[in-house]
Structure formats: C-alpha cells, structure tokens
Length: 239
Image: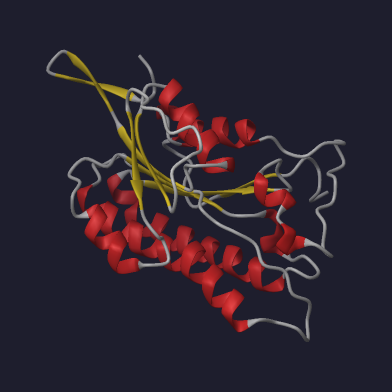
C-alpha cells in the first residue's frame, strides 16, 4: 500500500499533508511528490502556482504565513492533519555591520514563528504516529554574509528537537531537512546579489525532487524511529 494511505474499515484512506511554500521551489516539489505517493495535499502559499489547474487530491489555500492569527484560523478548519511540512521561506543577505532589522524580523516570522504556530495548531488534531518536517538549511551551521538567515534556520533545530522530545510518546516525529544550495527560484533571487551561491563539491546544485523524496520518506512508515534529527542534503558542501 502507498505510504500516503492507510486501511480503515477495509477501505484505503488517503492521509492529509499540509505543505507550505507549495507554489514553487522545494514546497512545490514536495507537494507533487506526496501526491504521487498517494497523499491528499493542502498547499499553502501567498499566491497560487502559475499552473493553477485542478489536481486530484490537491487543494490550495492562500495565506500569508507571517500572520500567525491567520494560521490559527486556517488550521481550526481541519480535523484530519496527518503530516505538516514547512517549506516556505526566503533569504535576505546582509554582512556584519549592515544587518537589517526588518529583514531579520520578516524571516523570523515566516521561518520560525509560522512553524511554531502551525505545530501548535496541528498537533492537537494530529493522530498518534503523525509527522512534522521542517525545511532548514545547511547555512544554519554558519555562512559568511548570511548571518540573519542562518540564525532563523538554526532556531528551527532547537524547536524541532524540543518538540520531538515532547511528542515521542505519541509516535509523532519531528525532523529537519537541511539542504545546501538548491536549484530553485530563490537561488537566483536578486536580493542575493553580491553573495552568490557556491556550487557543491558534487559539481551541481541540489535538485528539489531529491529533497521531496527525502521528505516523503520521513513522512512514511519506515521513518517512525527517526525523530529530532537534522538531515543535511548538501552535495558535500559540509565536508
């Protein structure tokens, strides 16, 4: 049976995953991958994908993840969330001496506060054995010129490990996927001009589909003993 389905009364029922940043990049790849694995997917983003055709098993909800009140309202409308994947994010780069408070606050709201709000809202209605995956970054270990971005991604590790400890008795796992430079629109964001991404030692950038398949595994039945971990997918950049 597909990892995205379970038996109930002799019928195969599709599990529901909430995926943020689902309109492009890593989030879109994860949403597509989970649909292929038999999940029902609710995609969250500020804007729908350019190709906004109806896809079986997929629904799109428009939301600004910087608004934690809007997150609470949206999640109150669900009763069956089996998995949460927080892939939404963006990068602003500023060197020491030119830190921008507004950039830091904006990233913190989307990367960290949104994760807190969604976990807080999802866990009470998540069945035992549920799954939470946060998309972090290899830069959480430190990267010149990206201190403010790295700080928000590093905060996710403390959040994930603490939640994993609290939820282990229910079989709910909480993990982080920390990609290196990934071939997405964010990689070519003009805001990163002056601090371009570095090619990993494998000679190419990470592909969104590689991250998506790892996320699908962490949401599946064979990852039930993996929790509180940060899995780095960086093509050797951390070596």
